[in-house]
Length: 123
Image (cartoon, rainbow, N blue to C red; front, top):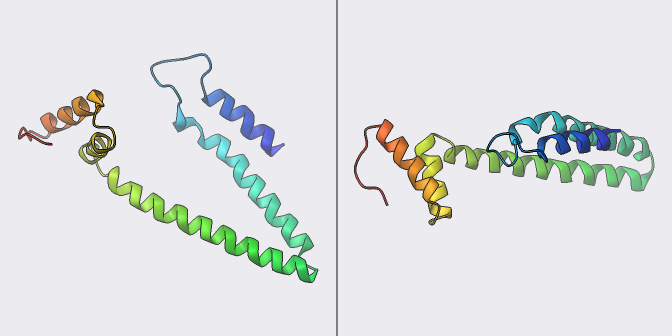
């Protein structure tokens, strides 16, 4: 049920019938993530059920360590990405650095500098 819930919500987000200029409206994916947490909770419950056996206890401990590493990695990556999303200037500077041929990124960065009244040449 959780997998179907995720699938149908993601299908709605992918916009096979395009509405607006967005290719994917990722801001609507948060509803679908509810099912991912449900799947993780069910997996945790299943691991607890088999943890009565010696092998099950080891598997359960491995699962906790594995998910702990995943959660800490995601927290670190999120913290690092927040530095880029500090403001529009840092965001568009990052886009320009990664995609130097993206003229839209240069234009958006220029609009930000114009709003900030920072008109010196940026490279």
